[in-house]
Picture (cartoon, rainbow, N blue to C red):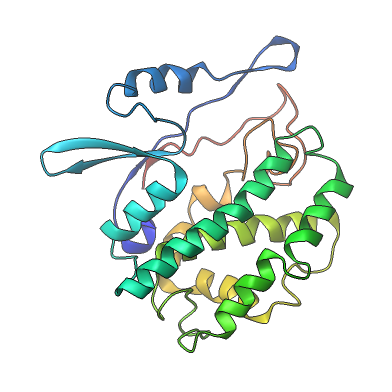
Length: 244
């Protein structure tokens, strides 16, 4: 969202260090978290830090961060009805994320049958993809020239949905399944055309998209760029920390 709007930002990634016996050390994050609790007792990943007037604020929780950036960067609804739609979509898209993370960080996260069942669920009858497809089909402002979820202009939900479609599409390829969005032409247009917008080019060409894995080392899918499991102690993970 910041790259799309041309807003510089500092990205911070906390290393998850390998330890003896196949474990991981997350002390880099937990140390930082402890120091931030005084400003926001709810602190967790993700979070963002910004200056509001003369006060530094720390905002946490995914949807709170996304909505804040949407409002600040002009990527939000322009009317009350559009703002309601943004909020509804962020909640539904979070359902899509929670299904993915709940599986890949769980005990069957690398089980290919379980991963395929996840895709079958979200792409099946009355699944999340169908609901989003119907929403786009009913929106007269949606087109390949205006590939947006709300009001014919870019809003915060566009970015979270694109990120998740990208992850689910890569999962389908990883499993050798048919293309993810064959039965969802509007979603397919969104996925393709949103990525091709000139304003999306900075992110699409950045290390955050081309080199950073979807998930962290312990995930059953998306811990590496190929989708395969992370090999403990044998792979160098890209650090997305930097100013963009």
